[in-house]
Figure 1 (cartoon, rainbow, N blue to C red):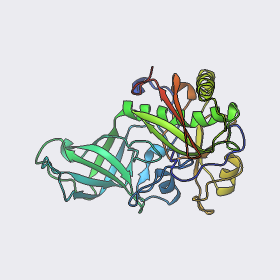
Figure 2 (spheres, one colour):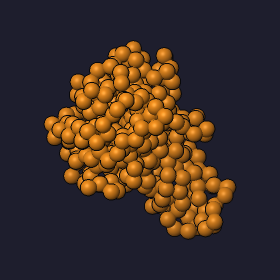
Figure 3 (cartoon, helix red, strand yellow):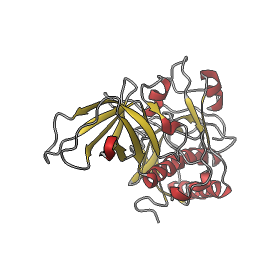
Figure 4 (cartoon, rainbow, N blue to C red):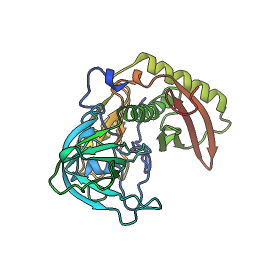
Length: 315
């Protein structure tokens, strides 16, 4: 999810081709430890709370990598860039593509329209009005732009989708491990995170005087790998405000409206969940081996960095 705002104040311990059962309830992480959105974009978490105009198909199933859709608008990008390639922004009535947010990168893929015309999607973003934009270019130069109401098929890179889900889920798993070894929200409050293939970390508000960083890293690595080995089904569901607060240990971040129905992700059974709009694995054993690679304490913030199998520099 999105760690740009404030944390979920939990008080209790909290190749795709061969993918087996698909978990329809598994989905995006809505901003818990939340990541800050830009001035023009919002996190998928908040988009999920405002009845987005673009239906977010990936909310229902992390492992679904293709869907049918209809074009709402298709506009040229005013500045094509130094290479002179014509780029366009597509808005669809529904999409399986995850828009960047919550520290998680966007999906990439393609949109295939009438006559097999293919549009390569380089990035996906969520907007304040609840729409999702797909930025890219046609695979063949001179292809005729899509028109409103064209029926298209959206497909995303399946391997990348799963890697991003595994990395993001590992960030949630880190929160659980922190609680399990005695550094829960009463000591360290999750505040921000990044879940990218080249770098991943969670930042916590709070610091412990005389903290033994090496021991913390070793203890977290052992606990996270134990949790992965034990396995356990993840869950995600839209909930009423009070139910969501209870699921998150009694309190929700202040940015979540009282009349909303946030999506709550629980990465390990019987632990506290948190709001999140990102994609996640169905079972924590899919995360694979985890390494905790660093602990940095600066100005009251403790950053814990990690890697998993498939990430850059993982050993």
